[in-house]
Length: 334
Picture 1 (spheres, rainbow, N blue to C red):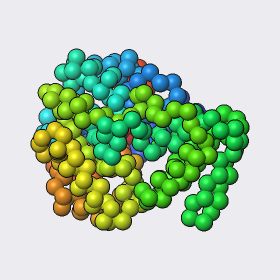
Picture 2 (tube, rainbow, N blue to C red):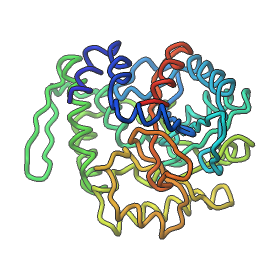
Picture 3 (cartoon, rainbow, N blue to C red):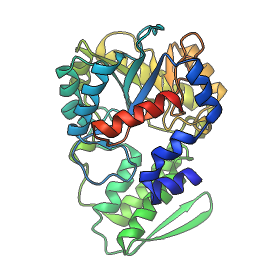
């Protein structure tokens, strides 16, 4: 709670908070230096509207990549990790947005920099957004004069005002928290209700669709890119039955393998915190044939002492080179 309040009200103090948090872990990392870290990206584009804080501008992304290839060993997520004097960094992208292909990919090629793209497969080739962006599209591009949104979820009624800009911002976070814990069927039903009430004028925003098969194949053909799975429906695994989890993990793997023509054994958990998956999820991954999986829990890589199916990562912000360098020092020590 404290971290969220700090991030929302005093973002300039967040680096200071990270520099002083986890003193025991800092001491451990001082004496036993990490071998590497994994970075997490989602979006690279010029959009100024970023409610989830996941967009990095192409200019800042290029500055970050240039810094990384000059300072560290940049390895692919699926590569064998070895302990050397020079630490390593892995670049990962979650979700599979087309802006990854349009803006990030050319920069990675320019700097000959490895990266791994994890794709949620259900919307591949469709002019459609992932559900957690799609309901935002409905709110922003609504044509209905309705001043409130009415939702009924598991017998509880919700009434969300939409008159003011702050109302919409509040609705985004409220709806996300309500939908993330639902099954795919229940979530789809709520989304249909929203569509009927709001009547949005835009079906899909240009940089918000998921990659199509041709784009995925083009990425995979690069010397510097590998493809992994991010599930099928971008659902919190812990909100699904074990049978549905197994289907998500298996079907997404097979869909990607059918596109690129070779094995896919890398995965990132949607949302990725400890509450978003379970030990049963981890066992399913192992049974289905995944070799590595990343969470969104923070931490460093110590080769020989890492759980390959629960790998920590650090989220990257829209930072210029100087700020990014400062955060990299935090990532390796916190």
